[in-house]
Image (cartoon, rainbow, N blue to C red; front, side, top):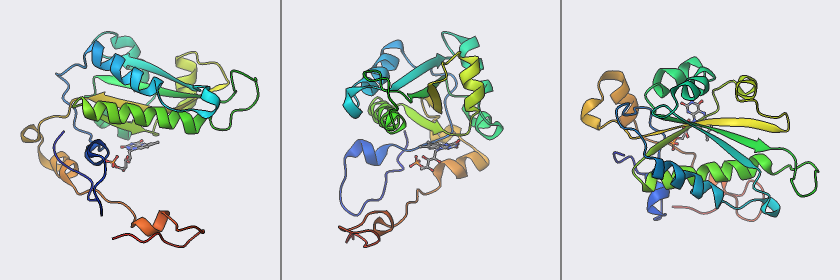
Length: 202
Ligand SMILES: Cc1cc2nc3c(=O)[nH]c(=O)nc-3n(C[C@H](O)[C@H](O)[C@H](O)COP(=O)(O)O)c2cc1C
């Protein structure tokens, strides 16, 4: 990925700083089977409440199963379809709402599934891949099309692939892809011991 590293007040882990959500994918570069398994392994080893592993991921690889990829793509919002069309892999992230060991409500299922998805983002960054997560998709439609039982909630779609080299990105898309990254100031979201008291940052 080209460099859009997070500007942090103190150094942080290189992969965390490097990861970002681009939208210009190289449609001609498939993701290898080994890399896809590595993404799954990364998610598999995420922490979860009671070790319940409430996540499921449906991998839709355009290069090996176009009809499944098409089905995932058809669930995306129009805005996301515009750029995700070039991503060779789409991954549907699904959260279980019931603990498998007790049959009771698991109110951390979505939290844990997000953590597993983030492991995928970090692993992908380490392998030179780019991931862009999307909430802009029709969750109900995805549930129906992929025959997902009711207790499981489709949470997000992830676009995965290689970034198009910068010299091949033109016009508005190039402006968008090279725009700076922004975050709230540290004290806006991180509190020092009590609600609303900003942590001291640089
Ligand atoms: C749960 C979730 C849903 C998102 N939905 C979309 C989306 O539908 N379309 C999109 O272009 N980006 C989407 N994003 C990407 C965010 O806009 C992006 O992560 C954010 O602007 C921060 O940028 P960065 O990831 O490059 O640091 C989503 C991210 C997350 C985590």
